Image (cartoon, rainbow, N blue to C red; front, side, top):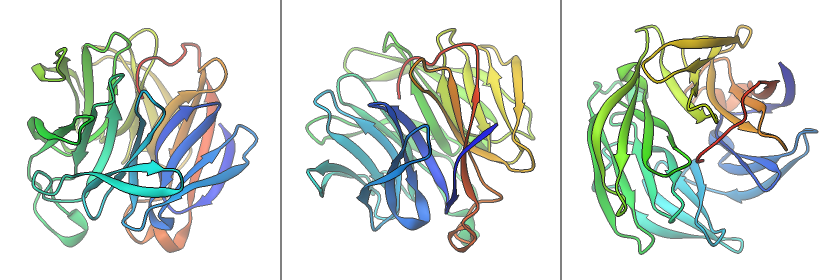
Length: 278
């Protein structure tokens, strides 16, 4: 794997957009971009810690603000609140996918393991373009990375504590139904960030193991790429041909990473290009 950038606190939520990789760096409270040469630029500073990123059809950037559990939009250089997610989210909000109509599907941790809280199921909410917040799906075990297929008809979410990828049908009005298991992974695998390729396979970052996995519908692990001695926390297919797999790695997770600054973005070439959203 090629090193793109290091010295980050905890990079997450990578997105390939407008010729650059966009990502959130949790503990420096910044949304940044980096190009393939490693040049970084700061897009926004989010005091309550940024996570999921996505764009509306008009190009407006949406940002999940974790600790105050809000969805923000970047208006010029200012952040404005789109929706308050706290009535639905009992713990920090997390990753997100924004569909082609500008609807945001946002997950949350469900509990705060760093404070010793017991694990509990939680939900994904849908935030419509007018700011309306609707419960989209519940009884999920730590909903994390999320993708939508190119036809807009299927949403797949990684349930980190459920060791699985779960799929839903997406109706014209954004309603989720037809819940099914896309892939039940081994108990030792903790799927975090994910991305989709043109063959319908999902690349999965494993938050407890030094690897990323290419997983097929039904659960077969078709390929494994080792990430040295560092667990992977997110991944995204990008580059001019979307055949560069960007992998976000670290030596651990949690607030202690703020001082260690062990976060890296690394890259490896793969055969099948990326597809769908984000």
